[in-house]
Image (cartoon, rainbow, N blue to C red; front, side, top):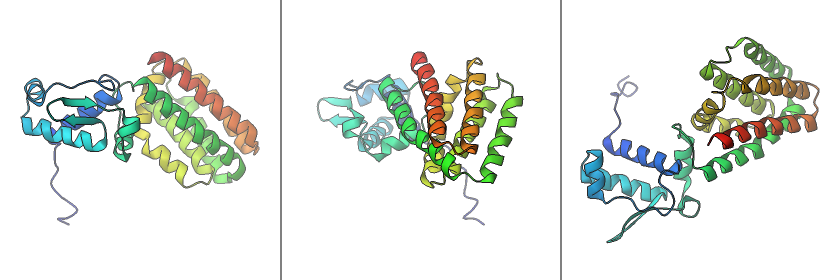
Length: 238
């Protein structure tokens, strides 16, 4: 029991430092090539000790987000060239504002690549229980308040997840789950405009019809139109 009930731990200053700078870099507020203030200046501005700053920068360097050059300073890396899997983990956990435009486009392109395929697979492999779950979700969409952004984001995520599950591939649902924090951040921005809600829900209804009739080409096309619509709105707002 003692192993299960370990003491609750708050984040250390180092962890807060790392998360803040990850967000600043991933959002593009600290662009590639920018030189950061010295460790002494950062410590003074942030109100933390120099060891906290130094250890935090070392962690960012390990992830490939920055390079620490003796007698020169700390530079923001081109994470496409220098980054590791750790940066993908940082992106997965990102949930605080706009992403750097290039990173946003890349994320949307990745989603388009695998979610069009999940729709096609759903039309091929769906079972009766998959259709029942999708129908139940559509009923919830019919009654939700279009200004309840949190509820709509949850319903939209659940819809895409159900489509992935219906496709029968074990990895696609895990990918969606992994990006849920980042997805919720972007979806929150998108659904803040209530006018987009009925458009998206109409796409959902049409996609379920295509999945039910096992029309793979139609399912893939509707998913592409759904994601293109969302991507266009997000790019305009970024």
